[in-house]
Structures are given as structure tokens and as C-alpha cells.
Image (cartoon, rainbow, N blue to C red; front, side, top):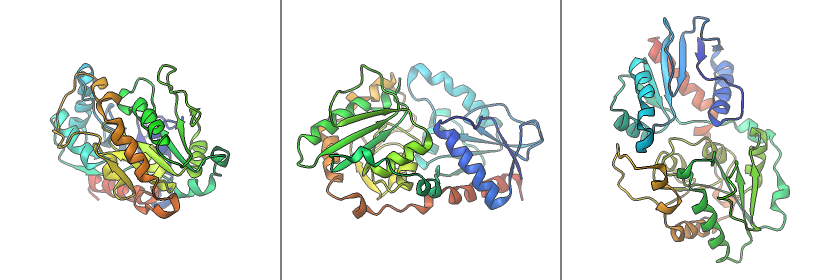
Length: 323
């Protein structure tokens, strides 16, 4: 099977990391060949939006859709791509319902496949143990924070400081990703690491005890997938695809109002940002997850191993090809 994609595979962005892992695993397990879009592929994998390739089966992988009023028109190219595709891959059941409600389309062939990460990469990455010096428990959060209010960094930082004041444990909060100066909360127990390479990220995860990810709506965050494969229990909010991914491998905090009405449009992303959640509830959840050590959680998620995800992708590609 010959596969092309509209997304360049170079760089450290989460979806590029995922696609590199996916194609390597599909090559190892199923003998696929990654080719240029002009080289007559059997399947052309379109990430989010893009032009279809004649004579190939065009499958679109939807990361998510825009649901704040200023960016609604940005969904139109995504909708056109879906309508022209031969199949659609959604990253979670929540994401499928959300995208179909916003785009007002229901593709005839679709599947839900979570993202995946490589246990081998985790095993090969040395832990960044210097981060632990002087602390009992380490929390980590990783995201593209800049100009993304729905990632709720301010709420996480303030809730962490509040929780740290209420426990005899020495807690540390490790932040991966760039933070704007106005959002940085200066505190000796918060370490800002900025952007890191994929290997460095995994090394940090292996040194930490828990992950926090409370973005308003995420389809299937790669950071959470990598955290779970690294053995981290995850503290997440109760909305989006994240709680679906986490399951009993962590704590789902009741931070967002439920039930959620699919198709809801918000005035702006700020409306669902840090001010939309209760910091007291989040700080209590931080203390709750601390009651068990990382080893007690014993997180093992073979369902998110990239080899299992590669098999699902290959199976869907064959289904769309009709073989």
C-alpha cells in the first residue's frame, strides 16, 4: 500500500510526531510505503484540510473544529475536505459528535481511532531526574500555550499553588511549552522549561509523577497519550475527548458544566478559558491524585501503543480501498 500525506513530517509539532511514529509502525507491520503526493498513492491522508488527489482514496484526519464565533468561517475548508473525502478518521467519540454538529456533515465512512505513542521511545529516553531534587511529587503540563486561552494555564498554575499550600508534601509543577510573560506565575515551585524536543519531553515525563491537562475541549491530545504511555496518571477535566482517553488512568475533575450540547458556539475562546473553571475544585483534584504515588497507579496502556493504532489505521485504509 502506497500512502501520501499533505502534512510535512519534519518538526516537533504533536501531529507531526504522531504521523512519523504511525508511518514507521505501519511500514514495519504492514509494509506500507510513504510516497510523494504526485507519485500515484493508493491512499492520500489529509490532515484537517487540503486538496484531494485524483485516482487515490482520500482520507481526512480531523484534529478538531473551531467553535468560537470569530473563527467559525475557518471551518469551511474543513467541511469541504470532508465532503470530498472517501473516509474520515476522528480521534475520539466526543470529537466525532462535536465535529459533525459544528460542520453539519455525517460522512458515510468514518472511524474513531485514538492517537498513539511509542513505548520503545519511552524506554530509550533517560529520565530528567535533576528536576526531582528537593521535591516529593512532580506534576507536568505540556501544551502550545501561546494565544490559546482554552488551555487554561493561569487556572492550572493558581490551583497548583493553592494545593501546594494545603499539603505537607513538597510539590513541583513542571511546565513544557512557551508561556507569555504576562501569564507566568512567579513561584519557586513552578519550573518553566519552554519548548523541548520529543526526546526531552519524554525524559521529563519519566521523571514526573502526574500530568495535568484541563483544556476546555481537546479531541485527543498527544501530550496526554505520551504521558499515559510514559506511565503518568492524568488529572483532566470532564469535557472533550480527554476524559474518554484517560478513563481510569487518572482523575476526571468536574470542572466543566455538563451535559454539553454539541454544536454550541461561544463568543470567544476567552469565554472557556481560566476564568470559566473553579480553582478550588481543581486544587482539590490535585490533592486527591497525590494520595496515590505513581507506582500505586501502575498505568499501563497497550491500547495507546503506536503499533495497535497503526493496525487500526491500516484496517480502515483497506476498508476504504475495498480490499
